[in-house]
Amino acid sequence: MGMGESLDRPRTFAVVLLLAAGCGGSTSVPPVQPDASRGRVVSLNRRPLPGSQIRITGCADQVTEADGSFDTACAAPSYDLAATTANVGIVYQGLTRRDPQVTIPVEISSDGWCPVYGTVGGRTEEREAGVLITSTAAASQVKGLGATPNGFFSSEVLWLDASPSATVRGLEWIGSLNGPTAFTAYGAVRVPLVAGTDSTGSPVLAPIASGTLTIPFEAGQGGMPDLWAEWPEGETSRLPTGWAGGPVLAVPTPDVPGASFTVVLTRAEYGQSSSSYSSAWRRGLPATATLAPVALPAAAAFTAPLAEALVDLSTDFSYTAVPGAVYLLSLESGVRSHPQYYAVTSATTARIPDFTWAGLPTPRWSGDTLYTASVSAVGPLGSVDAAAGGPLPVEPDAWAWQMPFRFWLPPADGFATRHPPVSA
Image (cartoon, rainbow, N blue to C red):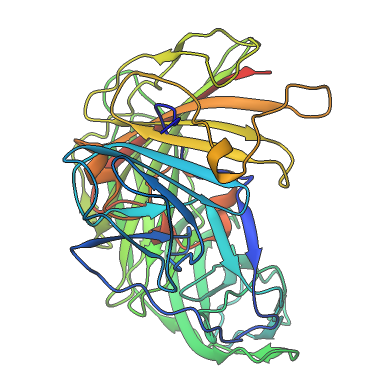
């Protein structure tokens, strides 16, 4: 097959596929339907990717159909699967399931921006307040209102084709803008998104109770918390958190009926030639809960090659084991138009995949193209089959803040590590 031995997870340099212009625009892309006899290729935002090239051990090469599906009946009992979309290629190694969902780290989006503005009513003076704007496809960060008048304007969100409407949510809390000690009020209003026009939404705040998530660290560990809310409408957003340090986190939450919460803890390790970090999360939490100690695993670290090595498709990468993890190897450029190469494996030795069969060139090691090889460990995933059951779980990277958390987070509890030391 000419494919390598590993995978990687989505990153900041994911390709954006531009479809119908305008917010709330519709496309002819059909929704993904489950089928136990066929695999599917989808984007980061779970949209089907028709026309993707597929290579499977024991099968003739294929192109995905309108719903992103492809045939697996021809595959060997254990097989490798490679898929490409645009200039991105990914390999899943050692699959046995016949219904894999291959997540290619690209986004499908419209190229329309829908500004949303309005005011927030019912605010208590001397308290912090802000709004966040969410849909099933995107979410803004919390925007502080500052002093009166309580108006806001948001144009930072790229609304995806799957989102003809959004929700403006208002929050009020005690504490600083970036560090609430308790939430005091909440209000939400639904807003239609119409191409080419501004949208308005003015929520009115009503008192709510404030919950607290209490999270002890394991001895000797530390990290910074991120809080995510999963709202009753199926939308997701990141909320402000504050932490004074210490071995126990006490994270305030807005106790909104039907909402659940996820806490992500992240720890970074910095070195002379590279840095790494690990994350652990607890998902589906009520507004108030005391959790078992959260363990932040050490990052999967390269043992070969070393930093600043000249690597190519024949380079053997090896890395330290992380119990319960599936590994993600990537070769990425800082230039979005350059090809990106990924592989998913359960082994601790891998190579960058070869996608010349699909028209992706061998990476160029030149002064104007800087490729970085990185390895990730995500879990708990017992096999590559488990990693092919939905969106690839990845750590909270910079690109993730503008996306709904559920696009990349696996169910319940999990962890991710990242180690990007090798450059060409």
